[in-house]
Length: 153
Image (tube, rainbow, N blue to C red; front, side, top):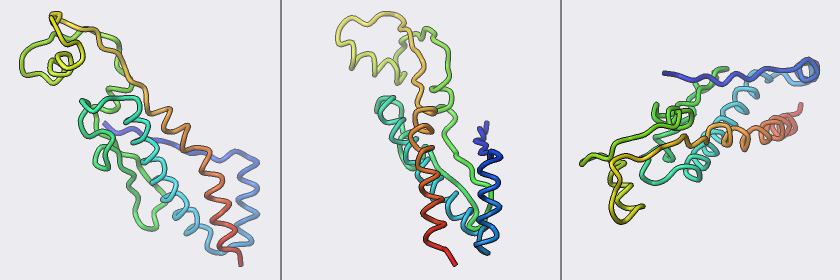
């Protein structure tokens, strides 16, 4: 299951983009480079957010393999890929899980509860996707402005 992040330009930013196109001939390349740089920052911020809002028992979600930004070298489309269980962990409903031998959650419960284990525990979501996006979003405007200043003609 793939989740898409759509970035739309408002009317005011569209006019400033059109003005910049007249000044800079390499605009599509600049957009592609800026988008790729921001995508890498978004992936890192998501990994940090996942590490802060989940525990080590969750596997490799907070690693480079768990959350990745993929974009072709001069592509105008970039995608943030995440393990499916990361999306499920972010949006699941609160529910009860039986503690049976061999399950990772049973090992987690033994480690955390230390003592007589109940037959089941209540689990809840660990929202981290919105927090990671909110951390990366303010960096986008500064990155595009820096790229434009660096490549003025």
